[in-house]
Length: 231
Image (cartoon, rainbow, N blue to C red; front, side, top):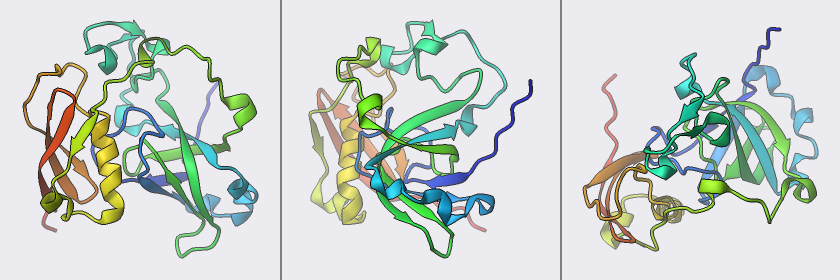
């Protein structure tokens, strides 16, 4: 049986590279825009969606579609040293590169110059990621407060984030809190020890964020404008 799917939309986020993206959805208040493909720009398809506070995004993990997969993976949460079954993880290296994310719904615009546009908060997707489907989050059936999360239950976090005022002023005020939230999740790879004080950097919207982590404190040490290739 052959199965084929087409993207219904693309998402616009502040993350243009994989490093730095929150490891799960819902961990920041950063806004993202979902812009529909021409074939799916019928406003009727969004009727009633604004009555929900959260939605599920089903998306295509385009950066990892190599056509190959392994039955076991090395989750970054475990430092890349322990193997788990691929179906016991959220690794992007899967038989079918499909991801799911639960995000807060901020706004539904049925008529814009780009067609229908949905604005959400807390997406953990790369800029330009194809969206395969959108479904409403239903609290009475989708929430399981007593669920067990295995190795994903604990998360490495930074209790303090230092963003010096003279550096914070380089980015818009409405993105500053989202940057702090991103850094509070300790975006370093899982193999980085708590005492690994090397300097790291990731792209955040139009800026290159340089930071280090000392103990449970992440500190921004520089913010530079992202290099734009000459056309």
